[in-house]
Image 1 (tube, rainbow, N blue to C red):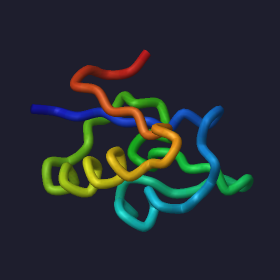
Image 2 (image 1 turned 135 degrees about the vertical axis):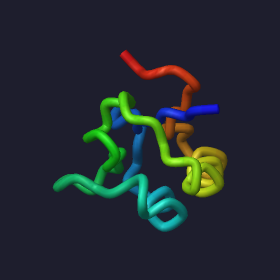
Image 3 (image 1 turned 45 degrees about the vertical axis):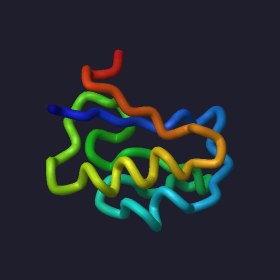
Length: 75
């Protein structure tokens, strides 16, 4: 099953947890807010299967629930 992800920058508090847990999926912009590096935070490119565990760890650990995941493309 495919997973797609993006970060809600309106609620992200730049805590750094997602990048620590899933560095192949998330990075930070100039303001320190997280974004998905897979497709510049659009949620159109599926997460590679070998990164799904990291995706789930980051999603479940986000203190503001800013990491969004879906089985369909966003937007």
